[in-house]
Length: 207
Image (cartoon, rainbow, N blue to C red; front, side, top):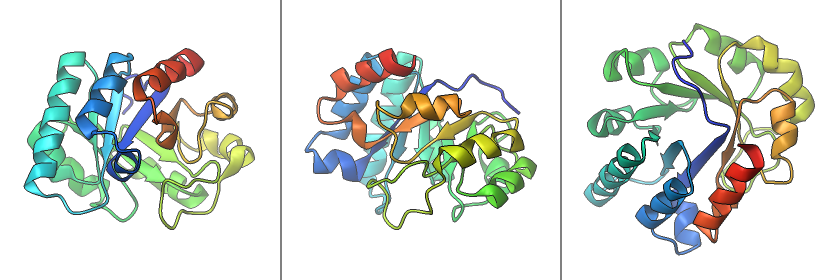
């Protein structure tokens, strides 16, 4: 479907990570966008209270003002409410069902973790795929088996869709993931602690 150009720098604002560094979500989002990010995903694995949804609405407004694509992780319903893209995992609402829910124009991303999932994703109505963890990661509980650069390179031809490398991505290894075939690198923990300066470093590193 490839209806948009996937930026090479794909920041993911994870509530748990942001809380760990004692950085407010809206302040972090504003810093990432001020640095020049063209896409921003919000990820929260806990319960979605009214306050959480209101925070998401404010971040969505920041993204609109900055001309950046806002992506909500897991929750197609909340993505629809705030006019955002949605990124789905293997255990979330199936992409086909999500497409019926959010409509034909919404951007949908989909996580994969192995060759079988990456191949099967070819039949799904999604716009881009994520593959990982590429490296060891501490930002996800019970992570899937590490993919590694060799399998990233080997599996890249399995899909024509834009591909995001995720999991353990740092400024030191990002270029190797891009050289192995990823179109973009997802950055979570390495956004902190100085978010604006770090996001600028990332954009300078990967473009």
